Image (cartoon, rainbow, N blue to C red; front, side, top):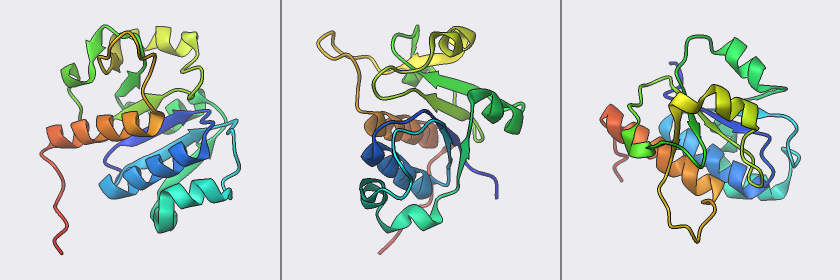
Length: 158
């Protein structure tokens, strides 16, 4: 079964964020793409602790560049999640198989990538006192908005 979504983290830096994002991916059936360099080792205890015992179920791939992701996923629609953007997450029209691209925790995405994807860049509105939201929280919120638009997932009973 193909992944519901493709979650791409551009050079992630904080292990617990990536671990939590990995857990979200397992929960919805999304594939996690990690673009090097990573700010941590995949065997770090913080990464595993945040992902709990779900890491073995995670569909993930580590690549060297954004270009490599594009080569491996031709024809997939891309949503760039970055501040600032002209549209909010709620104005996006997500479809199964979409790519959701997120930048580094400290610096976001490189300007060249954002410029190329300006028409499909979305953000969460927030007050001026806040520069950005936590990456794991942002990924989770965007993923579940996409899932909501798809009609949801089966609910686990028991």
